[in-house]
Image 1 (cartoon, one colour):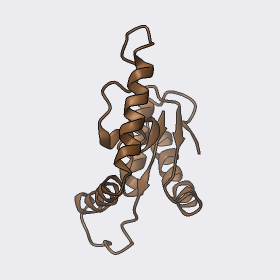
Image 2 (image 1 turned 120 degrees about the vertical axis):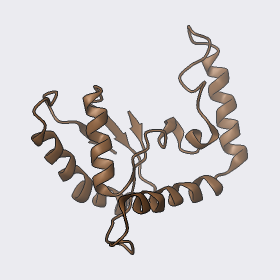
Image 3 (image 1 turned 45 degrees about the horizontal axis):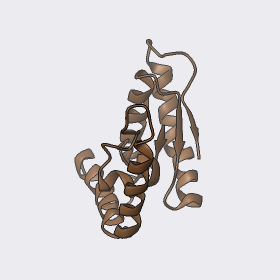
Length: 145
């Protein structure tokens, strides 16, 4: 599953903020990304994938229901909603795992900083959740960038 995680620490400037406030902060980052998107490029991508979808057996393709916001990051990377604090993202990854997702292809907006942050702050929490759940599906979820 493609995903573009947007993780923001509760200790940045919102240490005393509620989880809802922390998630809002991360969503504000996403909103800013969408607002700054190259609209003609995204619409061009939308047109291309819709044309490609016409050649599929269902005549729709996998991006037929994607919104502009979904398509700002190719492959619907923001649609997964892996946005928020490390704890919130880890819980969401674990929920996807319960639904049968065993691979997340992560794309990061600021690769060097965010891949390190994700690996050190989010993945250990995902492993803790998986270890603590009795009904785990077996092998851990794999995350690749």
